[in-house]
Image 1 (tube, protein in one colour):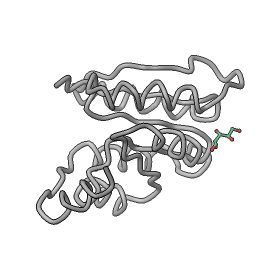
Image 2 (spheres, protein in one colour):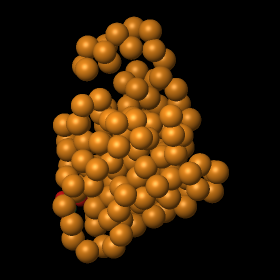
Image 3 (cartoon, rainbow, N blue to C red):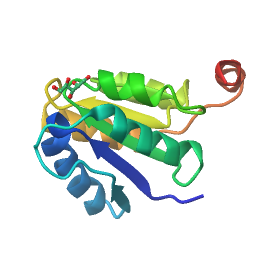
Image 4 (cartoon, rainbow, N blue to C red):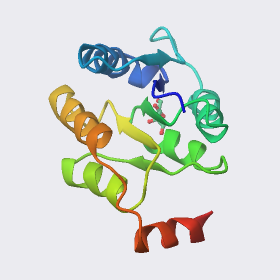
Length: 143
Ligand code: RB5
């Protein structure tokens, strides 16, 4: 599977998205940008759908979605089969959403988390593996 990551945002997540792209690229990880490409107002469900469908179809393994709060993106992304999008604003939840929930989309709110915390969350989320076993049974139940 493509190890490249995909990221998307609406206008309210645009600035944080750009900072995260740079942060992730500096770590030697390839990342594709699904937009939006300016701070002009746009509709987050369209971006969430595009990113979520590309993960659902296994074009990408993981993605990141940024909006004002992370909430709208997560609600929209979780409508797509196979998507486990987690809104995260602390490092413990970032770790647990991977270990226990096998989250495949990280949702962040630019209006909620500061840049440095968002980078810490992203790094932990990218580097934490799913534990499987009893957690796999529960994730399967969701599917
Ligand atoms: C846009 O104003 C805002 O509603 C959006 O970015 C997001 O926070 C929705 O959940």
